[in-house]
Image (cartoon, rainbow, N blue to C red; front, side):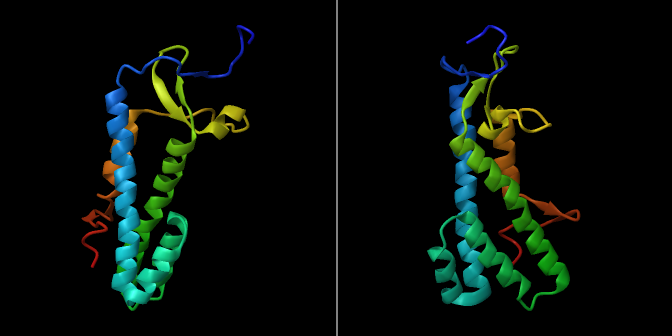
Length: 163
């Protein structure tokens, strides 16, 4: 490769803070697993065992989340309660996208700082104007924590308290 090549260098050496990375990614995956469970739980609460079974049979989080949001929209809840619940589930879009980035993208090392990060592999194509976004373990850990502690309109609302 030419010396001036702008390709990000893949991490070829052990990461100094590998344990922090494992905890952050593991915590994030754990939080997503909780959201997977909550999608099924919400379906049971909103539509009984038949809706729960429908959600379980769906492949992938997006499909299960769609079952939940349709059930919320057709529920007899107040508009305020529906809006609050739908806001919780909209927040999961970003989290699911990040889960896919973590699962399918490389760990790279910043050529200048030497700091490792995980980037969306598609960003490496250079087609996006925003440049390459590197996720670091601290950011991943904070997103996992925030996933289940979402607040809406200055009132604590969570996946656990809406019912």
